[in-house]
Image (cartoon, rainbow, N blue to C red; front, side):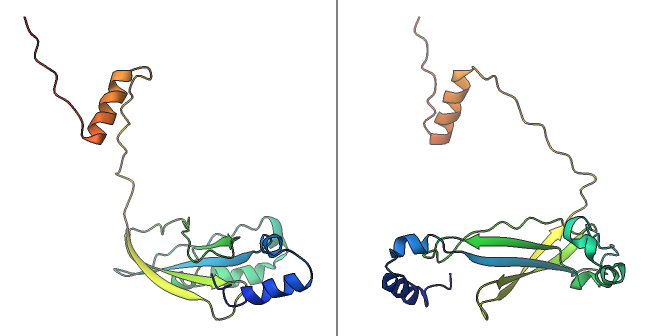
Amino acid sequence: MHAESFTPQKIAMYQKQGIPPQIALQSYRESWWFLVRAERLDGPAPKTEMKINTNGILQAVKEEDLAKFKSATFEDQLITAWPMVVQNVAQKSGRVGINFLSPTDPGKYKFTVIVKSQDFLGADQEFDVTGTVIDGTGITRKPKEKKEAGDKKNKEEEKEEKDGKKEEPAAKKE
């Protein structure tokens, strides 16, 4: 992404060392973090307590330090920190799906996504996405219609309908 400016210098350095550039660039890694925060737009901020998983590395953190994070306002809490590693130096753009739990209270929210480079200073970006969180208690999914696995006629009909080639059956002659 931001490697274009220093790639020619790296290739020249590898060539001086007798290392083929193709092999050296295979080890390229560029790390990015996607940080997500939420702000409620149509009402008061949710009164949710931040849940911190203290298993693993966070076991060593003192309780008073964890209390600072738990007392943060909703707007200051991170919903998620999602990592991405770019392994192709020639990649100029990419697509990433950020998984996170939505706020528990229904309403309209502004999600601020902060993209931070772990390797380049000044390459950070920030943008907002507005979305509506709905109350899912009354929502049910319709069950999928099951089709018989060995029914070739249904599969052929579906393909014809998809392609727009559905033919009307010919009239029977008597």
